[in-house]
Image (cartoon, rainbow, N blue to C red; front, side, top):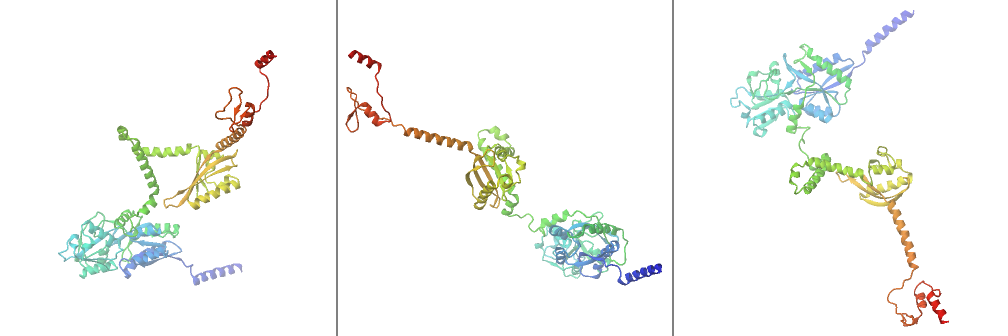
Amino acid sequence: MSKLFALISILAVCLLFLVIGPASAKDIRIGVLNIRGAGEDANKSWQQIADHLSNKISAQNFIIVPHNYDELEQAVAHDQLEFVVANPSQYIEFSVKYGVSRIATQVSYVGKAGTPYVGSVIFTKGNRTDITSLSDLRGKSLVSASKNAFASWFVTRDEMKRQGVLTENLASVKFTGSADKVVLAVKNGEADAGAVLTQILEKMEQEGKIVLTDFRILNQKHVDGFPFLLSSELYPNFAFARLKHTDMQLANNVAAQLLLMSQMKSDNRYPNLISWSVPDNYDNVRNLLQEWRVKPFEEYGKITLREAVRQHWVTIVLGLTSFSALVLIIYLSQGIKQRRIKYDILNEAKQKLELVNTMIEANPDAVFIKDKQGHYIFVNPQAARIFGKPAEEIIGKLASDLFPPEVAQSMVDTDSTVLSSASTITYEKLYSAPDPPRNMLVTKGPIFDCKGEVESIFAVARDITDLKNLQEEISDKVVQLETALSAVRQLEGIIPICSYCNKIRDDKESWQQMEQYITGHSEATFSHGVCPECYERALLDI
């Protein structure tokens, strides 16, 4: 019974699978540039890529999304695709603007002839005896597929310039929207000459739309190994590229399967076989676009003074420093001709810069720099000694990491004053954080960037503790001296004294005993006694 039940369950599951079908595969969109218009054959050429990838990569359904030039860029810009097949110039543009990256380069075929390179074919009707070279196009009309077409317009224009023919030398330039219309316009006499991507003429002949002998190729070139008609230099073919958001593992699988397409045999379902090679080098494409300043290089080679300063301000500062050092060197070396000849200006400038750095390092004052957020980004050895830490333990720290809260807050307040006023301040401060406490004379000021905005703060702190102590000691001595002087009264000038009685005349014309006068005009007092001579004399008188 259990075996019967199991068999019924298996049959039910199989029936359910047949009814519901396998899980739907995820659509993977491949944007392509439809250079030949919206024809069914053109779409079939691209469809072979989607069919091959869907066949080889399970659970993925690859679909082709044809676009014209402008539509393809919009699809890439808005991430509406997973992969894109772009002509060489569009690939460079997409890589610069949107970050796409190539994973393969197309090998195009006409019959069994294939190549991973493209160029431009410039042609006219075979019966036009007045047009046999590019120089004959002066005053004639030219048609191309699109003003954004790499080979049929960018490369064509470049090749004509090489031959001395500029677009302004032409009677007119028109764009038809597709390569097939360009060929038919020349065939029907609607334009004197046309330019298309290599292979187009051969493909249209293979499709029975034209006969090659009806056309004359202008500036025809022959390159070994290149099987198609050619009028220009060669460049890498279309690029198969992944968009920036596309899964890398999926891109790797796609790249591997694209390389295997070269082993496919011709299939009647597809009018032209396409295969792929490893991604080529597109530098010559980039160089061409830059030379012509074609997007995305419209501003290539142009730069404003402001932009130059913004991009190269470090070089400018170093240059000015070097120039200043050079002026100083020339000034100092005047009259020393032999030294001037041998003087290495750049080496001297370097030495001057190193000298400045040495002076900062050896400066007895503490020198440090903070960023706008208050982090220390430079301290010299003297500053490190004051902090009491090695420099590597100070760099990147805030004042709050190194000092008590009240000291750190005081530093933050003065930093804020410098930042807000963008001016230099000088103040004295007693810092109790170092042991022992020190009096410091601090100068803080802003450091400006190339835009004139404050980007950091410098500070120079001089230890004036000994000076302050000396000042206090001098002040004490001055007070003591003034006190002493105030206690001393001096007798000055000429004192009139009587030659007989030794009385002194005062300023009131009164005669006083010497003791009385001196006592009244000074702090001195007298005590009386008898000297030995007077004592002897007194005894004799008795």
